[in-house]
Image 1 (cartoon, rainbow, N blue to C red):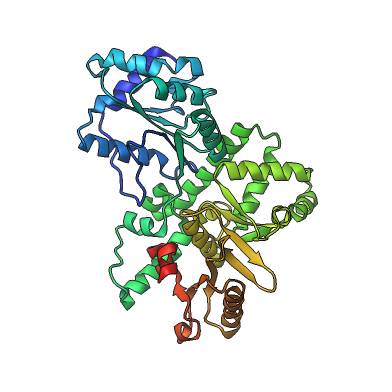
Image 2: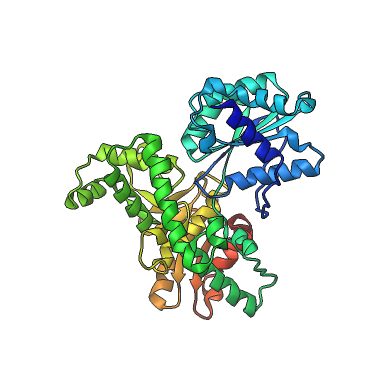
Length: 431
């Protein structure tokens, strides 16, 4: 890392204007006494959560010269070695010696690719008056390295693309009542959300640019966050696997069947490699693998997992008609809303399949795009009765988009998807 370039980058940020931030539902804790890590997919808003924390610190009277931000993907800093990281505070003190005795707030963006970064962060935390925030696109690397180095003195928060509530806020759409007009607008906005997703740049982009930006995202995530980071040798297999995952969100995934499908495509790959590659996509915060609820941990491990992608809009990067498969994307949106709040999520399958449940039998949810025809309604009603039989004390909800008159009387635990997502699934479950 070149000292001259480092000083230029530091001065450019400190003496420039802080980027404008749109409010989100989550904000960073500023002074926990712990190192705060943010993990999540690229472009999901991790950096702007850092900027939002800086704005709050400035409003509290913190000198801008005490706020240090470095993006380790900035090519002006490359190459970066762990032993050179001490240059950061040294250069800051040389640039602004009159603030050297004050507390420093250090914001390190995409730091996980600097070998040994976590040991440097630990030493700083042990020896300096400093608050440290780090971000990374690899949930496993960030959480593992940070927690191992800090030994209980760190917390790692997950950052997701925008929720439906945040999506409406970014688009300056206010649903202030449950009138027929508001319901119609909310339903239309939900279709838009499921079509293009919640990545902030996509939400604010003009419609013709959205598919192009999503394709760029998918390519960038594949190469930077998966192929390069994990040293993937068979790029073609990984690309095909990523395409498969995003085309089949909210579906069960069976590696043996997947292996046969890949073989029929002429792709020579072992089952172990497919397991490994799925793990890479999971670590890169691109997919979730939801287990089947089972009292036996061995069975839970070996049963097929239900696949969910990090954002329904990324499906548009791999499909010619992103408006299709809205039912699966709605189920994924419901899963993501629950995943923002808790990790112990499962599906259940026996006589019927329950889309989502917890591990204690306290709540469950089933999702269906349209209940307008009798067959769909009877199927979903049977699932709800099945869930209530399994977990008598559970709060259950049937989440839908289209419905038939009299639905609320026939299935009192039904709720429109827009309302469920807008209020947050935990609040909806208490209603």
